[in-house]
Image 1 (tube, helix red, strand yellow):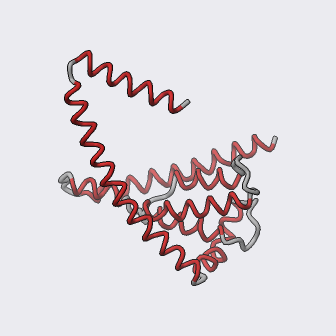
Image 2 (cartoon, helix red, strand yellow):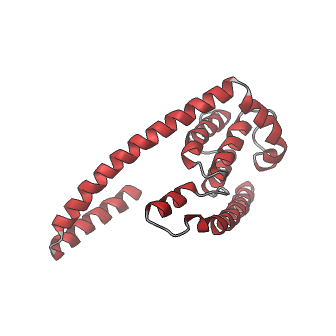
Image 3 (spheres, one colour):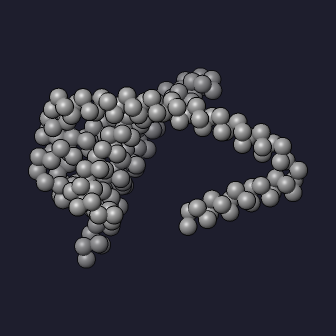
Length: 193
């Protein structure tokens, strides 16, 4: 369904540009965005590889297990399906910490690792478990202390004080995090009934 909607939007955009005589501008923007996409993909690949390596090293050193043990009492209430002492608690905590400090690119490989572990706990089924849904909701609505991407965009575009966004972003992400928990619990309750 989403692919049909995107196809419609693309075709409508091209048709609108053809009618208005702005196809040259559309082509120029299209090729410029292709170059930017390649630059972004290459820069993200390096970051993802780096943080994946850091996570593998932390896992081999036992740091992920230690973090899992430290945060398990807190996360066990949010993820009741996960058995006590499971390493996925460490991945979830690492993902939340990376998001908290505005390291969204670092949170991605950690989040993928957490989701793989949650899928194993789910018996490798294609249907998402309650824990997978909860983790996705919390990851999407993560509390962020330092929105590094927004600050970088502000600096790049000459903002007088790009750090002005920190307090409003923190307030907004705290609200979104708790709202995600409330919605997750509500739908989990409805599913059980």
